[in-house]
Every structure is written in structure tokens, then in C-alpha cells.
Amino acid sequence: MYEERASRLPGAVVWTHTPSGSGTGRVLPDGCMDLLWNEGRLLIAGPDTRAYLTGGTPTAWAGVRFFPGTAPALLGVPAHELRDQRVELADLRPRADVRRLTSRVNSAATPQAGLEDIALRWAAETAPPDPLLTRIVTALNAGHSVATTADELGLHPRQLHRRSLTAFGYGPKTLARILRLHRALTLARTGTPHAETATRTGYADQAHLTREVRDLTGLPLGKLLSGPG
Image 1 (cartoon, rainbow, N blue to C red):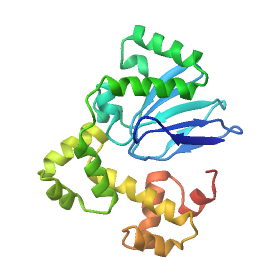
Image 2 (tube, rainbow, N blue to C red):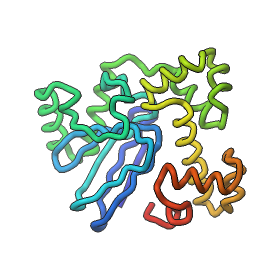
Image 3 (cartoon, one colour):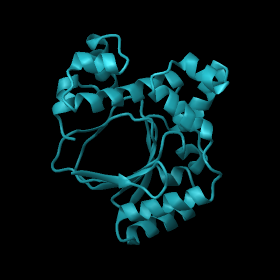
């Protein structure tokens, strides 16, 4: 079972996931990074370019999902260095600090509450996020092209690409594809026909939507929509 709620940290989401049985899980790319707890360990989920597959013995997870572009400043690590990875927090921060944080989370009322407290503390100790990052996400999520987005923000396309790699883990074109995927899935889950979904979310046609969904998630659109969650 998966549950989430808005975090006290603006733009972030606090979530828990307890698998109901064995089998492969599928985490879709979303432009975000997460602080994770699993069986007493703290990890960081880097930005995914494709669906991340989970498996093995079912265990409970908890996490804080940061708004796109905000986690690298909190961690002091460029997002592209963690792309498509799950890494131990101790690989990124001093081990003594991570041991204290782990103990704090494990002794909290719930792991998710402990994770949220860490995220809030990191944010309090870090400069506020660059407003430009939110403007990049907003423009691309509105369906603007990379060239138009760069022009609107007063950036050279190469500058936009460099900023995107650091903040999101990949270039603006990939981020735009991922954001468009989620717009399409949100619309399709309301029962909107796939052809109409494609048109309304900026795909050339239904075939284009079908190819993109399979490429980014590894599943056909119909099977993806009929699965859990």
C-alpha cells in the first residue's frame, strides 16, 4: 500500500510504501530526488531517466520526495552524479553524521516523521532554492519547448542545459519528456481516450504517446494504467 501527504517543507511530499506481496515494483521517473528509509538505513534516490524496478523480499519504505531541482543544494551533490542510482546517505555525508541521523529516524514516532525532520533541518541550514529552477519546471510542464523556455528565462540553451544537469540530473529535453508523461498519465487515468490524451498533452499523435510511455516506463500504456496505483 502506498500513501503520501504534503510535507511541511514547501513542495515536498512525505510517503510510505508497504508492498502487499512479492514481485517487481516500478517507480516511474518524475524529475525528483528522495530521501529514503528502509530497514533502518538511509538512502538517496537519484533522478531516474527510466522506470526504476524493485524486487526481492518485500519490505517497508518511507521517504521524502523533494520538489524537482531542490535536493542537490541540500545534499551538496550535483543531481547528475546520482542519476539512475540509489546510494547510501553515508556515501554522500560524513558517516558519523549519518549514524546520528539514522538513530534519530529509527527512534522517531514513524520513519517518515523522522525523515521530514531531517529534510526541514537541511532546508533551514541551506540557502533558499533558486527561483529560476521552479520557473524552468513551470515552463517545461506547460509544454513550452526548450528553446522557448531558455528565451523566456534569458538563458542561452547551453546555460539552461548546464543548470538542468546540476539541478535535475539531466537536460531540459529529458525533464520535459518526463513531465509530459505525468501530465498524460494523470489525464488518461480520468478515462480520457488515449488519442485525446495525446493531443491535449502535446504528443504528435497516439502512436507517439504509446512509444514514449513504453520507452520511459517499460510498459504499454494500457497495462501501466491497469496496474497498482
